Length: 460
Image (cartoon, rainbow, N blue to C red):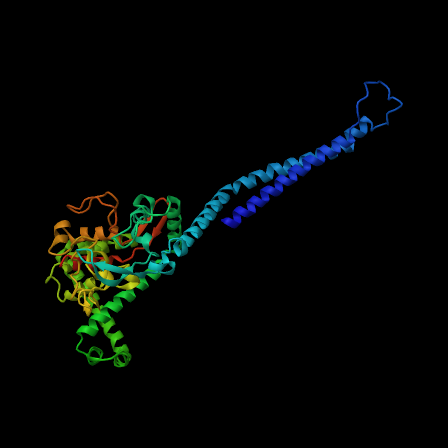
């Protein structure tokens, strides 16, 4: 668009120059050929040079003048409409160039001005920040490394207004307030350039799926290493030093990958069993499946089947071996990929964002001691407590629960049975469309992954 706009601008200037030059030439030759009037003598005075006769003036000279005027008129008549036909492209080019300039300024703010890169990583890929934890009396407790989520997917989970709210007022006492409304140092326009930069660095669906998938595989690997009775897993658990651990990991690498694939296959089998039970319980649903002809109809009825299967999987004991599905939901709930960007534990589990179960030096005893012995998944932190049937009280069905996780909470909009309108800081994990920009951002999770998280949460 920018190249098109530049070309049209150049053509416009060339046309203007031709018209202007033609006008000057006309004036020059008209003035040069003119004679000063000395009267209205019937006969030519002796001091006047003879000029062309009427026959000559109204012949080739007139034809040349008329032809020149016709050429200039043709150039103007044809070129101006062509130029204005390209006006929308020029306008779009101006917008694109403005976006580029703003995004460049936002990039400078991200890397140097506000140094967002020090926490959120280069190009918003996620990072961490060292933070001092204080006890209830404001005394130093421990120094921790707090996970800072990736920003290259932030517009998939939050609207630009919601992102602006975080920039203005901060988040969770860790992300500082940068905007003037929250007492920060940055102006409204500077924050706007930061959002333009975030638009630029958003990654596509394939990259999102790859990150989530790798996070899941890492979570399954951790679970298998901790629980499997296979020789390779026992060897890894019993390794007493780094060298032995590296050797055990290398020896068991192929077996681990095969075990991960088998585990994920068992999860898929549990979903398939739930779908079969759902269909056997609802003959009308079977009829709709059989009647679906178009791709749209097939997708719609498959969504019905998925919802029916979810309702079964979310209730213990209704589907054989459904525990593996709930374990899968827990792994997604605490997915560590991209500094926890795709996880729920980052907000809903106390201590998860700074690895509270890892050994570290505590101020009051000076020993390597975990801050927590274990996490209470979904026990609440920045986000509300999800345990003890809270989600069952809020959402009557697992399907309603999944819709909320998919869409998130909008600013000022209530949700569920008792959820009040808030600041929109519960992200949506499904696809998000920005109507103002006409852009659809890919979802952080697939509907199948969201369903698994919902089933896990409803069993906390």
